Image (cartoon, rainbow, N blue to C red):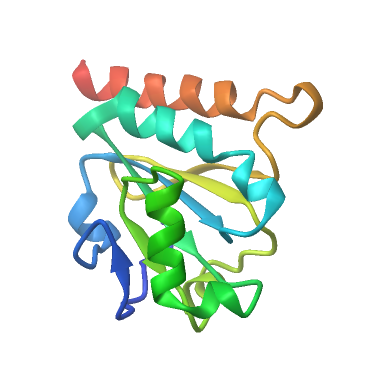
Length: 150
């Protein structure tokens, strides 16, 4: 099972969410830091997933600070707006979720199936030097959605 999200005070674009409440949906959970160059390289993919999958898939960002500015919830909120990140974002100021997930780097994307199981993860830029992490994840998500429709 995927680790549950630990409750924190600050969220952008959403009320606090729990993975257990999202059972029945595929969840694409990504850890990022808004000033991280490698993280920014994935932003267009996250926006595409959010638009492409609609209500069938929940994209959730976990903004875990790397710099002092990233510890300011107002700066995180402004950055999300400036980057058109319209999906729910948990602001993990104390890195509690980072530690709970045993995450080791920015960015990392986790795929959680409809039953709450961790099915795949990708560390780093999804399309670094010809990598196809975005397509790999989309193929998995499409398969999970097809299974649920049967």
